Amino acid sequence: MWTPPRRLVGDLTILGGVLAIVATVPPRWYGPIPTDSYVFEPPLFSPLWIERVVLPPLSVLAALLVVVGLLSLFRRDRPWMGRWHRWSASAAILGGAVGTLATTLFAATGGGSDDLTAAATALLGALLALVALVFALPGLIGWGIGYLRAERDRQTLGLALVGAPVLAALFVAVGAVVGSVAELAGGLPTVLPFAALAVVVGVDLRQRRS
Image (cartoon, rainbow, N blue to C red):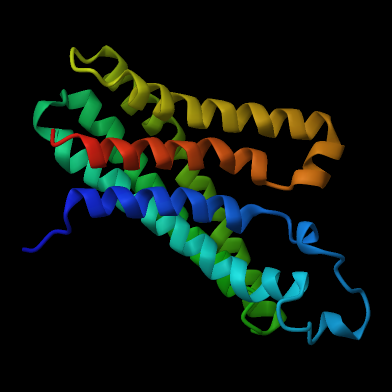
């Protein structure tokens, strides 16, 4: 079975990290959001149009590219990983895949479906997002610790895998205490550590063969 070159996967993973940042930038940063009739038919390239049309598929693509990068990293290093290390990586990838599905469902809620269908889709997406967190966060931390403990030179990769969920949780806690931060930046501070992780993984895939 044909598999894409690892350098190409590394480039796509880096792109996924960049797209994750772009998709999480609050739409208000692009300009004022209208509150009148334009809400129903926003002008082309307006902040509301970007929020409804551009950002949802962009977030799905970003999540998919990052998961593909993590899967490629796991396939490359699996031969020398210990059992618990492999299980942690598998949990992280499973959580990422479920999270991608949740992101797809959230993106679908803005597709003009009726209120009942949109509410059911959003509820299912929220449940899947919770499942994704249960698997991905401890999986990433365990995966990263495995790299930190490995005799090979994997310190940067290990720190990125451990640091992403820890920093994201810290930013969520700060945003809950300081409401102005969450209002101004939205979910961007939470996504930034995972975007940095995607860049580190992408660079590692480009530079290492094993």
